[in-house]
Amino acid sequence: EAGVAQSPRYKIIEKRQSVAFWCNPISGHATLYWYQQILGQGPKLLIQFQNNGVVDDSQLPKDRFSAERLKGVDSTLKIQPAKLEDSAVYLCASSSLRTSERPNEQFFGPGTRLTVL
Amino acid sequence: GENVEQHPSTLSVQEGDSAVIKCTYSDSASNYFPWYKQELGKGPQLIIDIRSNVGEKKDQRIAVTLNKTAKHFSLHITETQPEDSAVYFCAASQNSWGKLQFGAGTQVVVTP
Image 1 (cartoon, rainbow over the protein chains, first blue to last red):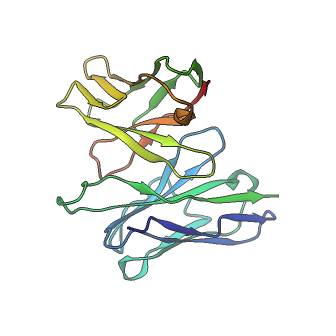
Image 2: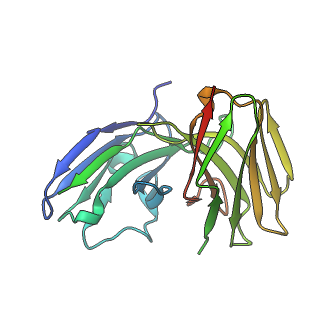
């Protein structure tokens, strides 16, 4: 079974520029999460989707961050404009609601490392 | 909201010895407590989890204990091996499909 795919793996931009990250979850997983992991810290949830609807975006800085999950599969996370403090690894995770599988375990992708100069 | 504290931040052990990582949480409504292992350049991977109706769970060399009264839970790794070297995160949530609140992580180094 293929894991969660993310691209790009690395991105370097200057402050005030825009950037977008892409995530392809495990096939059939209804729930998709975006986390921000700042160096030396644990991941922090930015947004959670159930199919293509938002379940929780309480910690998403909505003035500059946006995310969408069209057709309930792939997702993109965008930052516009970027700030220095946005430098972090952006992790995508997905989980299944099917009780036949290991229910609700969050499977993480490798992440996108963003550096804002 | 939930706050999870994790200690120690770094842990160095000799191969074959045991390692213990401790976490405390603040929200009494939390009832799902997973542990993740993160290797360099990779995303976190679930290694074990425990729910509030269970006090202890074991999987080969890894065990987790939960004390709901005191709001703390611990990860125990026995007979450590060099491949156990990684960053370990504890987390807490009100349910396994919702928002996970992570601790700050513990860098474990196992020396041969």
